[in-house]
Image (cartoon, rainbow, N blue to C red):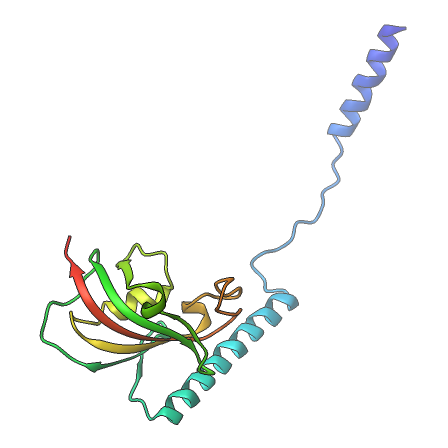
Length: 176
């Protein structure tokens, strides 16, 4: 009896393993309709963010430029002092607000900001902006959502998909 049972199990496994049916695998090189929809939605959101930022800048008569990454910047108080470079630890005073004027964070309330350029873990656009500055300079940056806190915000005071405005002054540079 045990021999017949073993034979039936072996025959079943042999038949199951030799099944020549193939299942069709998805082709990941072609864009699906839903993928095209997501690409279109993302392009729309990027263009909408850019229009909102440009309108904001125009209303304030700021003279800002935009980097290739999408960071808007203006250095309005220049110095001939030490330039910030990659790897520096930078201390700075700041005000972070939303485009509607809501102030989210300030160095007056939370203390000076401190960032190690290139390893900060802060908003992606902040490192890029600070690298354009010298000790003692003042400037402003506008970070669209993809350079700031992205889809979810900071889970405290900055809402999801928010563009943020940084007013910043470089107070000290610790060179390493």
